Length: 168
Ligand code: PNS
Image (cartoon, rainbow, N blue to C red):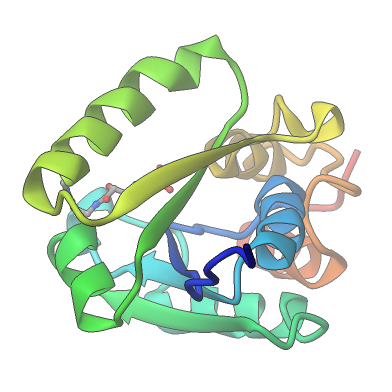
């Protein structure tokens, strides 16, 4: 019997302030598993982001050029509401270490309660990226540390410009 094929449309929600090579690795691997992947930037000014939504989208657009089935979106409010609005049937998230697990589990269970028809799938971060976070990268960049290889080159350039620092 032929397997029934349901097309998978996934939302990968996040702050992406800014996109790191860890996010990129997840997007590269996730995009091969699904038919369509929407990288969804949360418009939440209460998190006091370093980069505006427009700047974050510009960086994502440059970094995500090579992935034809990946789209960039933005949303306000609930991830599940955005997923329904976009006809998505999956929420994709990454897990770097056990410390991520508790928060991700809470979110996944809450999202399942809100929308039982939408599954959450987790991909394990690549080992080389398991210590990278947007926050750490920003902290290091702000102090003039070397962030080469942790973020795409265009993001590195923007961070250096923002902090006016020469990497040490
Ligand atoms: O990159 P981040 O900051 O870890 O992403 C967090 C994000 C955007 C996935 C999370 O804050 C979120 O889903 N926010 C939308 C609000 C929502 O849906 N809340 C209920 C789920 S707990």
